[in-house]
Length: 121
Image 1 (cartoon, rainbow, N blue to C red):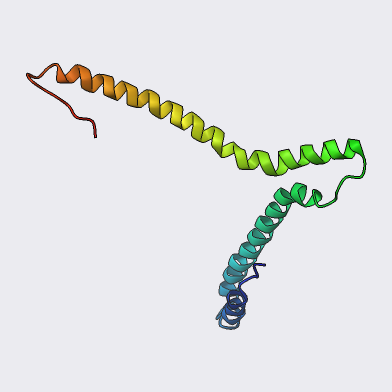
Image 2 (image 1 turned 60 degrees about the vertical axis):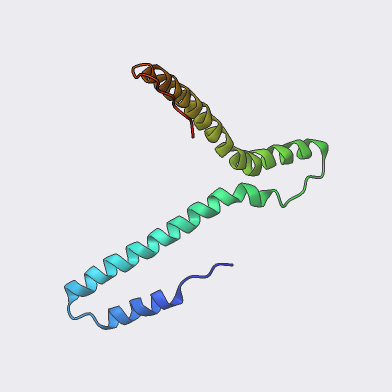
């Protein structure tokens, strides 16, 4: 379980104690409160992403619920794990096409030179 950085907040309290003017206090307040709000928003966003997975902890009790539970498992866990494969497959296909073009261009270009043999690494 990850915990918050208590030292950071202790330093914030110390910074507040050390302010020398109202303007400095306002600037410090703006920075600190906005930072904490962002942290809270980030945590809430992560919670929202994980709620469908948490729901899978409730096991189905009827055949219809089993189908929905499996669909939830696929949509919430398996699909996000597999999505990068689709990207990699597309990248690999595009890379092979570009490599083929380069190999063909090298083969054409070597004909411009006498006795040119190219050894592929």
